[in-house]
Image (tube, rainbow, N blue to C red; front, top):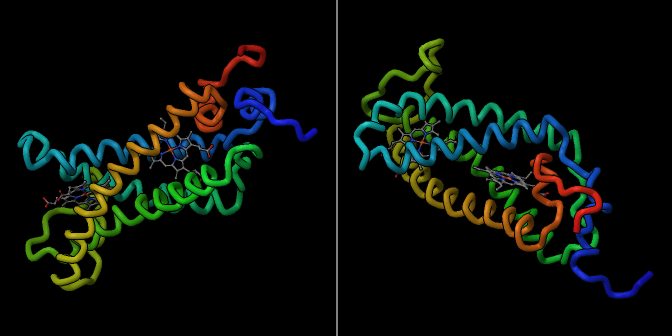
Length: 197
Ligand code: HEM
Ligand code: HEM
């Protein structure tokens, strides 16, 4: 049937309720999201809020955790394709979502890597361990590379903040304005009842 469909039919719950990310992908998404948001807050505020400076050891340890979880997540993603976006979603919107997700993956790996470069190339290296449980090795890099890591970490940090805000706003737009099942694909608790309109 080729008749025009209105937006409620396009995104109807019946068409999508079973199309969710896997449990592993959902667990990794929300764990990484929480750690990234914490790290963005501590990183951006530690200069102006002195109490947060004591958190920088945790910032580094959580950041390295994000690196490991993000590599695991990418591997899982390559082995388990996520459910396709709704067939009738406009092509531009699908393209934008895929591009935003790809850049988020680059940042989830790029932020920890540039932080690692920064502390490895620093003239005065501080302690670098995972919550006091074991030491994390420094990378064998020059101070110039450390300086590059520092600059990149700061620029990428602001870009990541902007993209996370846009990504979250897009998810909320789908849930609250378009009233479709996109958020529920990643947060099943928000699934709408089958017959609710
Ligand atoms: C630092 C925070 C976050 C990061 C790094 C992040 C990253 C990502 C990435 C990389 C994907 C693509 C998954 C894939 O297809 O492999 C994704 C999907 C998704 N995210 Fe996030 N996310 C974050 C926060 C949030 C928040 C706060 C929300 C909700 C308000 C949200 C809602 C979603 C939804 C609904 C999807 C699935 C979209 C779809 O069905 O294609 N995310 N996220
Ligand atoms: C998800 C991972 C991470 C995120 C989102 C993140 C975010 C940020 C942000 C936004 C800043 C403030 C940048 C500035 O204004 O100068 C910052 C600072 C910093 N980050 Fe990270 N970071 C992460 C991982 C790491 C890792 C793995 C390390 C080290 C191994 C690290 C070490 C640092 C240090 C030392 C600073 C302070 C730089 C300064 O005072 O100039 N970060 N981080």
